[in-house]
Each structure stands twice: as structure tokens, then as C-alpha cells.
View 1 (tube, rainbow, N blue to C red):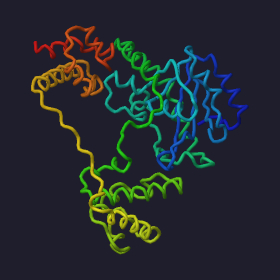
View 2 (cartoon, one colour):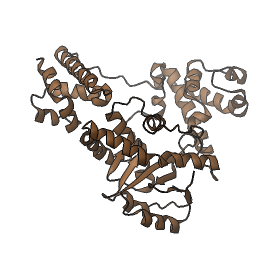
View 3 (tube, one colour):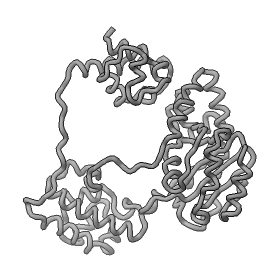
View 4 (cartoon, one colour):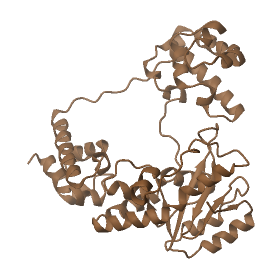
Length: 376
């Protein structure tokens, strides 16, 4: 795989000038979140129709020269599954994209269910992509030749893939539908989680713990965060969530008992056993009247008429999904169907006014939804 590695500000500035004015640039990013405590932008891949480039944000932290290129409405920026790329480009580099073409969205509009880049490239281009470095640590330096070759393959096939998908969208008269979704995706920005619960409460299985178990989980979670931060290591690589829950349900009191818990290696018990047992001890010492409790959700009162409308619009959605050969959840998700049922629109304009409803959805299944709302 031929590519140029960009690791100086001067070369990045020159590259941005060279790419300016092209009709198309393919883009991908690699981040370090799978291995590191702090997720961060670690590599930016760029491909024109003729050349490939790998930009190193660790060597060139200021990526602003790319800003004008990505924001140029005359240059189409081609991504596959742009959602996270756009978020991390916004957060770490202050970059936004205009004139987006997302090959994953395009494939979904063509009825594809397997939407990973490898699956879509194999189907439409007949090329099998390598998988060896999918879980690589992109924050390490120097990156191996194999990792760099792998990274370059993420964008080199995007221009021809875009062409094939666009051709098929035009043939099936769905290009306008996809372009509406592209424009919405362009507005993606980094946002912090809206979940107001404390982080330890978001551990899978926490809701099922008794108050004493929650107190232990809280202490173990805080211990794990500290170790992960100190080692710049992803938290699950310190100790997995299943092990945290197991320790909270049946708290061990000795290193021997600790080492027998599923998910706790003998090495971890030897190296960190004393710290883990101290964290468990702090949870056990919390007074009964100070034990944490999981917030109780408020159950809405049942509304049989609303439930019936939801089922009718869901059935209408499913029928149209079958007719269009689209994934039902992609055509319209459950939450949006419920909003439609609650708002009881009687016209296409009223349906379009329901928050979240797209114009292409009104065109694709609007009349069926309205009949479902009316029960006619």
C-alpha cells in the first residue's frame, strides 16, 4: 500500500493546499480509546482518487490546515460511518465537515444489513479487507508498518465504493433520501453523555445489586478509575465490569478468595489484591443508613389507546420496510414511532412537524403511518 506519512506542520499545510479544489477526499480516523484511559485522536487517514496520506496528530497537534478542505462545499468528504469520526474531529481538532457522503448510510438505504466497511467493500467492490489491526493501540509510537498499511486501506477503497453506492442510489431513486441524512449527519458534534447517573451506576448489572453491593461497587469503581488513569489504560483492561459485579455480590476477604473470582487473574490478585480488598472493606464499612440506592424509575400510567396506536404504526412501518427492502429500525426507530403515535398527526405536514421525522421518511412511509394513526 502506497501512502505518505505526514508528521510536520509544514507538510500538512502543503498537503491541505494540494488537496484543495478536489471533487472528493476520503477520510477516516483512528483513536486510542480501546487501549487508553483517555480516548484521543491518534491518526487521520486521507485518500484522493490518486494518493493516500496518514496524518499523525501526535506529531502535528494543530490540524487546522485541514479545516478549509473539510468545510469546502465543493469537495465531497467521504466517510464510512462518520458519526464517531465527526465527534472526535470536533472535540480534538475543532474540525467540521460539509458536503458529506457516508458510505454506511448509503448502504443502509440500499437495504444492506451488514454495514461494516469490510462487508460493504466486499459486496460492492469484491475486495476482502484485512482485520489484523482492528483492535490495535493507535496511540503507540512508532506505529508498525503493518498498522500503517492497515490504516491506509480504510480510505483507499472509499472513492470507488462511493461511486458504486451512489450509482445504485440513483438507479433506485433514493439518492435524495440519503443526501438528507448526510446533511443531518454533518451537524454531529462532540457532546458529553446526558446520563446523569454516577459512572459506577452505569456498570451493567449495577441495578440488580442490593444497597450493600452498590456501596462495594462504588468503591471498586473508584479504585479502578484511579489505576486506569495512573496507567493510561482502558478501565476494562484493569478489571472488567463482570468482575466488579461479582466482587460486589460475593465480596472476598482474602487474597486466596479474591483470586478465585471469575475475571480476577492470579497476577492481579498478587499485584493489586491488597488495594482491591481495601476497597471492598470500605464498601462493607458504610453505615446502613448511608448505603447508596439505585434511583427508581417512574412508570408512566398505561394508555391503552396510545399503545394500540403504537402497534398500528409499527405494523405499518414493518409493511413498508418489507416493500422497500429496508431494515425496519433504519426506516424508523421505535422511539420515533412512539412520538408519531403520541402526536397523532393527520396530514403529511403535521407528520413532518413531529420532532425527528425526516422528509424522506414522510415520502417513504408517511401515508401508511397516517392510516395507522387513524386506524383506517
